[in-house]
Image (cartoon, rainbow, N blue to C red; front, side, top):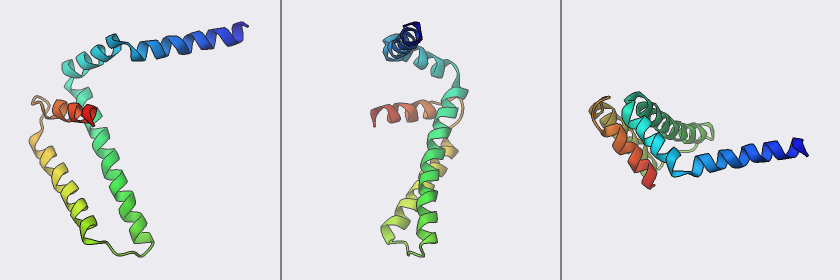
Length: 106
């Protein structure tokens, strides 16, 4: 009985903690007060997007397929977007926070 009850209670407590408004506001305060954590989140998201694009490119090249014009445009626009974002952002401007809010909405 104890072997089943304790893990269930721990799980319920964890779910309650994660879904409570206190956790959400605490996470917002942490990102606002520590720009390095916001930067890490944004960098991770950008890495994920770039890795997905690279995997698509590698699969196409490994299957000896040619790139269509819209695919090349997507790759070029992603490259320009990342370069522009990287050139504009600093630790103290709000670019990282704007990116996080953009992620929340999508």
